[in-house]
Length: 350
Image (tube, rainbow, N blue to C red):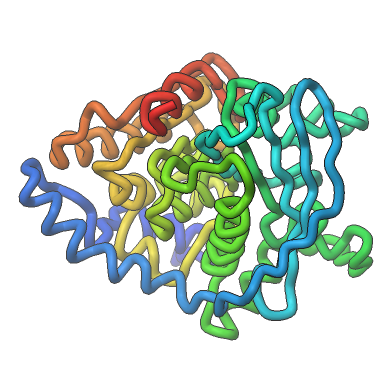
């Protein structure tokens, strides 16, 4: 009897089983690291496709209120042709007139509420549950610790989810992450390149606000927000330190095997060039804090730690081991929060 495979999913699992990306890092020395980074970076960046053209942001102030000891602001800005975004800003209450503070872009991950939970909106049971499950309000907590924090919704989430008002375009059973990715690639872009452009636009506006020290910027995010933290750090050199939470793993495992990724996280041909730890290693020698949940059911600790160990080797070769930190916390898929304050205090000179 002839036994052949008729499962396309099994085909992809088998294809990546022994796959070694073209630019997988195998060096040991600083010179090898520098040559690898110099050669690989342009190829990796090219997988993102075109970026939307930058336009005038035309920021419009919408509201300011005090909540939980923070001064909170809501703005609307233009981020590219035909599209705007709501920008939320959290100011520490103890800021003095004329004082400048470091600022952190707080990137949200997947979920119904986008930036709201991250920035500390707990005004409904659903938002409170979101925060409790993922320790998700790092945009609030870091502001309570003295940093200015800011956030926008990535495309497909929060107020920029087409299912929600004021958009009212429900797609039953369809994931807007994947739909936007299909649209974007047809136009030579990716969801990553679009979101990075929007993050840059928000950062441009933020840097012009009173009290912001534009030379001391950090970025942090959970899960899909970890994806965006990675790419914001690689694409915008204004960010001096990055914290990637629960987005460490191997693409053959969490992506192809577990199907735990979407159009927000991928670029054409990227895995042909690099695995995720290699891409994270491109941040070196820049400061990087990695959060891994020991009980994470999205990014399993086994392969998450293998990812970290590979990043560790890259930082060692780059001569930058002092700039890489790990927060392996006894939690699920969420922010550890054990090292963030000290990490950003150190690397943003606060």
